[in-house]
Length: 311
Length: 311
Image (cartoon, rainbow over all chains, first blue to last red; front, side, top):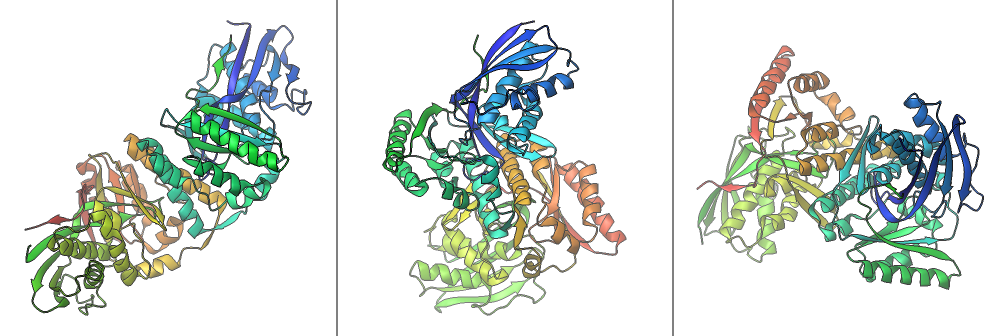
């Protein structure tokens, strides 16, 4: 049995425009790292967090990483074990890129590795959802499931949990731009209406079905046509500077589709080639710079396999 | 150029439980027949309708078959042509099996054959939708698109119209039972709430995505799990005698999934083998007989190709 492990878990793009709460995919970059060591003192402790500008709690009961690891250990009947965790945030918090999810998944993947992979990555999803509940007030799976499984993931059902891995064209690349404005997930969710028109729901599930079909058929045009959202984007886009301008720029530059990543403010574009993705990040960052808004950008293929060991 | 043609167009199961207004599939039986002859007298005329118990209009402007054929001829600039139509209904009207759609599609396929297949079957969809508007007050495509294309069909979008053929397991069989009670499409639609909970919509589009994935993956379990409807079925099932009892009987007898066909009152079960489908129709018809309700039943594979020439 290992005594220590260092792991990486990926950022994720939830919703994928039309699939609110049911679709998400993982990227290779950015993501978070966790270094986990067994210790003699029973209990789960956080000795260090870097890259969070002091925003995350070191209290093991309040931090999503340690809390979900504790939950895992209780479940497998090993609450006697002692663990020390270092969390190295390599991605912005509150960015809409599944920041809490990447940390939580890294922690769970680390502890499960130390426990000789007692559970499958898929079996770790409910533990990671508990972490999301702590972080966002809502135990959603559209970040943690793709972070754990890699690729595109469908959450067909929450009760009971039913998670389906979808195929995707390997050459798909993602351009991500994070405008440095603050949009907490809780507030972004509260903006969404709880009652909607059936007519709009029909439009939405036509697109969800179109996007899933496009992924199976590797039909880029169909994927792109399906990436429209009549329900959530009109509201959430208000919080994102020049959202529709950025959308036009991305689509004109050759993006297959464009939208808000999770609850934003990050935006993403799906592209056929990395060159297009890089060109789009440059255009969008320039657009934001014109508004005096700093931004970060990432270009990545779709992450095929979820978290990985780094040592 | 032919002078006459006899065609068959298939019945269809719209919605497929979770995919309200966006999914449908065709069956080999039942269906309608149209005999169409060129005549010297310009204009489109209905000389005979059989199997409708006198319920359908012979007035060419009011009958969906002649009206959509006229619309087609105007579109191709051949309103000068004379046509005589015999419509032979081989399926119940108002059954939820796409009765008007089968007739309309048979008429359009017939006239397009006489016009040397000027348009593709897919291009005939908008003309058939006009027929549906006349028949049901609402130009939906989830019957006419599968009737024209065969197989499982997704209507991703209505504006613009975007129709995607989905794969399906070839061994799939359908058990259909039509309880002889009256449920007009217009009334069945009016019962449905126009505002719904976002929460329920998320459940629904998770299932739509699951059903589409199941069809691509030929995963019967996933197809079955996805065939649940939290929005429309709870309302429409009220009009169908012993709906939930029939559902239990079908699932216990080995159906993959069970639900209302279109707006009902027909119900259908998807099955892996024809034997299961036959056993289910016997069980459901007996159940209805216990309530003194007459019924018709059909067992068919999924129709792979839409309308066919009979001569």
